[in-house]
Image (cartoon, rainbow, N blue to C red; front, side, top):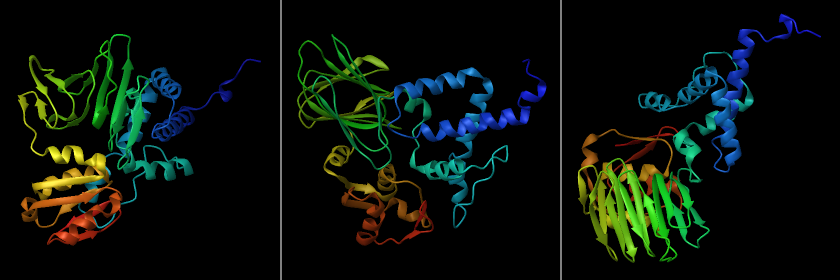
Length: 318
């Protein structure tokens, strides 16, 4: 039987079908347990039709940072606007809204990564060579164990490495700015906006600047270095860089605004200063990470500040 035009979906129906598929992928890709096969299927779906990529981009934009920026001037988060069509399914309204702020890893990083952690979560991973990696909050890595070397790429965030010695296969960790080469040691690598930070707990590593390969430094026990396009330098707060493994953040003469920036890595939402003078208030102390929801309350108990929760996602300090 030859299909008639009546059997074909109308342009509107086809568009709504694509939108529904985009939402379905949006929800599934926010699961940290999604398989590589599902990731490959998603990539194939994107490449099938330019409208697929367009629809998926619109879903991501709809639930992006624009809602947070809008919340800064309001007493509560506004209900999200409808997308370009009027589709409203329970899956879309429930799952997408919950995941608005819970998962903020860039989708390209997520598809590339072998291991990913959500905000406020940590994960300990045993590699096939016997080495262990502990991922901190909101972090991602890829792992490639070859016969002549072991390569880990830190795509985002922070990780602690406890490397199993193997003289024939050096262990290499690549960050955005740094390349750290070891044979057997325990060390931290943290990628942030200002560069990569490497802190050695025990052992010996060589850290190179990926922008200037001739620039490198040998680190031993308790040594640390910060690496960016400008070069190599000592890190400002090595205890903060390593204390998270024990479940704490340690601050030594740190501005409150910088402390809040660190705390925000472990919790969802936005923190706004009502009194901007408080930003430069210097603090010292140790804050537990065991319950991220109570971190700001701990600050309020020890500092002359008031913390007001307008919503679950918007907090005012004043």
